[in-house]
Image (cartoon, rainbow over all chains, first blue to last red; front, side, top):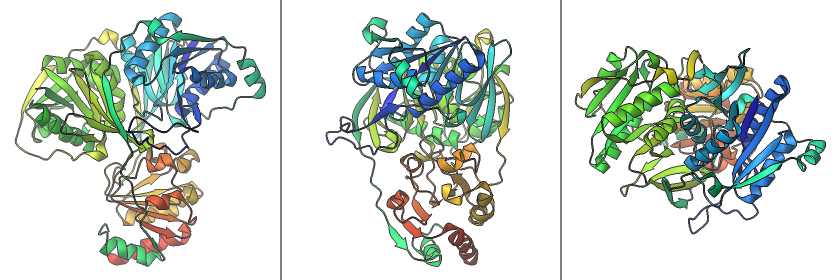
Length: 251
Length: 321
């Protein structure tokens, strides 16, 4: 089985995000960047499938700046076999990301594409679904468990949905997007990090893929959210309940 | 002038607030573009649902029946919904940013060649929209530049459509190429609860790692939850530790809630948790750590041992009644 896994470079989820005063984006000075946590879960799942089934190949792909090499090296150090970086500057819209991966799927012919359910920077949660439609494939989004049928012609995906858990059966090849509870990603080992340096990391300029990069969604400005002021400290439970009743009038 | 088609999702034949909020936003978008607002309900045996939907001030309700739509699956629904939008000349398709809407609408966007804006929280008069990014720490003002548009709306950010008039229901034959379907519904394991749904409740009481275990959610937190007639939520830490099921998680990657009253118990207030609740009208934090970041967004903060304060609060609330 060949598995293609997407890995996006994003700011550390625990970092405080500040909006630039000119409204063109966020302040990136001194910001630490990591592999998007959901992509990390997708990489881990691919590695577990490989370990269980044997003979599988795990290929990472990222679309972004040259510095995204760092995140691909992290995935290689976790155990992925090789990586492809589609070089693109600035903001790449989700639709363009999906189109770029569609081209790579045509080149690589994977049996499965694993992705995070959303990137924690843009929070769009659309690329996996768009890609599935472009390819005419099935999808299992927000996956918390993946089970393969004996003949590997399909997979049963448990999905985290409103009100419970849903099971769907998807024919392979398919797109599966990882939710938080799919697994706990491993840390890269020291030997893994050493090995990763020698693994193949191919770079392709996005222009070489020949995809339509026309603007679909234009970003006009980025603003900070309305600030919420800290309110009162209360001393006792009784005082709290009284205030909620008489002042806030919510109970 | 563009006509709007609202995807009215239902879960096993009941509408949740999601459908009515999508309608509310759809009507706003139609008014802005000078077009008409229609609604679509997809499934099998959906006559009664379509009639109910017709009461909410839309121009027409399209009832799309097909055996392949019996259960929600992304590929069959994407085929049927995008074919309907094309047939009825609707250039704008709107739905809720729920687990169904998030799964479905990006596929519809690709089928229609439409630009997509997901999880929007505001519709501006100039045609731009606002959507939260970076866990709600950066609000992006965007516009869709393509003639066709697909939009998912954050359910807590818009008012549900009000009942008005009685629209015509039109039965439409679904256009589905069954040979192309790759997804089969297997089963749904519902989290059973007598409490209101997390995303619809007026009051939400959430517990965090401070509760220490699942048993304490039951014995300490739940009595307060039920006294307040509230929904129960949890932080990611509490869910990850296995105290409560996944679908109670409030945060950037869980449920986004905006109740009248949100009570955070034993929750420190990580960035990703705040993203899911900071639009609540009144926020209360109960935490023994006075430095906890949750206090910075709370209207009322109580530094206390939750194991004492929560039962006391339940008593005090009961006395009010």
